[in-house]
Structure formats: C-alpha cells, structure tokens
Image 1 (cartoon, rainbow, N blue to C red):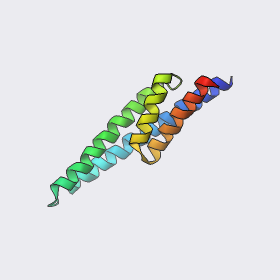
Image 2 (cartoon, rainbow, N blue to C red):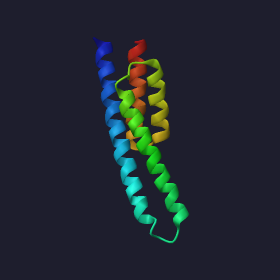
Image 3 (cartoon, rainbow, N blue to C red):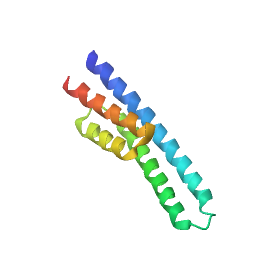
Length: 105
C-alpha cells in the first residue's frame, strides 16, 4: 500500500510540475514575442527559444507522469526537472525521485 501511495504522489507531483512548465514556457514565449519588436532581436530570440524548450520539457513531464513508477521514466523525469528549472522543474524532479523511491522501497 505504501508503494501505491508513493507512486500516486510521484504522479501528482510530476503532472503538476509538467503543467507549470508548459504554462511558464508559454508565458516566456509570448513575452519574448513582444520583445522582438525591440531593436535587440538576438536577445529576444534566445528567450523565445528557451520558452519553446520549457514547453517541450513540460509535455515530456506530463507524458512521463503516467509512468512515474518506471525506472526509465523516473530517470527521464529527474533529467527534465534538472533542465527545466523553476517551480515546475523542482516539482518534476521531486516527482521523479519519489517515483524512484517507490520502486525500491
């Protein structure tokens, strides 16, 4: 029963973190799209690129949340959490660690 509750906690943490990553990426992308009207286009393109990366990482985290008790997906979630950063990345990272703990405890 403890494994099931840890697996459920990992699922919830990874799912919420993935949703936050997607929202954060969308906000970053939209914000940088308005900054492209400014004279410094190269700086804006870097921020828009990071917004796209956050959206992709969030989608991977949402997809991987269903498989939060698999060893492979736990490692993927940990890496996504490390790369994603911010609150969403931290939640995905913790979700991956809890999923890993549910597998071996």
